[in-house]
Image (cartoon, rainbow, N blue to C red):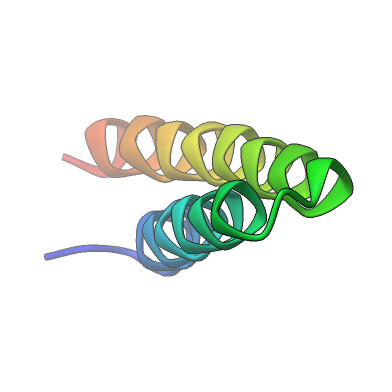
Amino acid sequence: MANEDQAKGKAKDIGGKLKEEAGDATDNEDMKREGQADQAEGKVQKGLGDAKDKLSD
């Protein structure tokens, strides 16, 4: 079962992908970079959640 960090991280990663694609489609480089940053942040948060999950086992 996913913990809160895993779920929030995955959601931020997906949102970042959508934002990056929207920025790419509209030639908005700032939005594209924000999306990439959101993806990176989401992956880190999910990784933290994965680590917490392993420690609790």
